[in-house]
Length: 181
Image 1 (cartoon, one colour):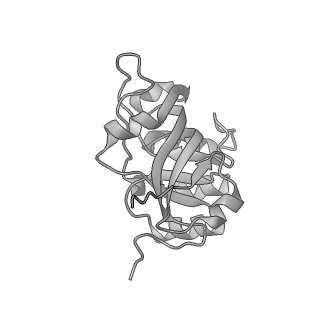
Image 2 (tube, helix red, strand yellow; image 1 turned 120 degrees about the vertical axis):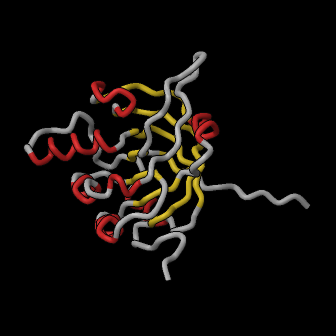
Image 3 (cartoon, helix red, strand yellow; image 1 turned 90 degrees about the vertical axis):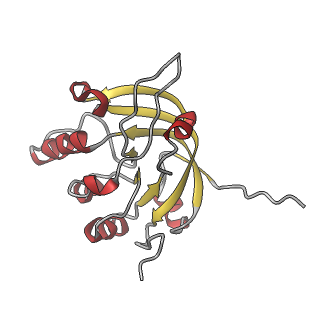
C-alpha cells in the first residue's frame, strides 16, 4: 500500500486563528502573497517606525521571507531563492511584530526575546529548507520590487507563491522545533 501525507495548505494573509492551530514541527504548504526582505530593509523599516513614519509596505498580518534572490533568468519569475539566517533580523523582529507582522520565513534558531514576541503576538516562525534554493524558486509565481529599490538585491519584493513547503519552527504558543531541552 502506498501512503501519502497531504500537508495542510495555508493561504496568506495567515490569520491569528490559523496560527493558533499550527504546532511546532508541523509541515505546511504556503500560498499567497508574501514579502521578501533582509537586514538592510529591516533596518530601514525600524528607522521609519522610530521616526513615526509609515512603512513603504503594510506589514500588518503579513509574512516576511528572509531572503535575497538572484536575478531571474530566461523568463522565470525569480532566480534562486533560499532562506537567510534569521537571527540576523532578531534585533528588529520584536518591533516589527509590535507593528503587526504575522509570520516570518527563514532558517536557524531565534533569540529568546523573539520567541517571546512571537508568543505575545500569536505569530509564527516558519523554516524554509536551506540548500535547495533552486527548488524553492519553483514555488514563486511572480516577484516585483515594492520598496527600497536602492538596496539592489536586498530590495523589498512582493512574491506570489504557491505551495512553498515550510515547517513551523516556533508556533504561536512559543513552542520550538526541535524542542529545546
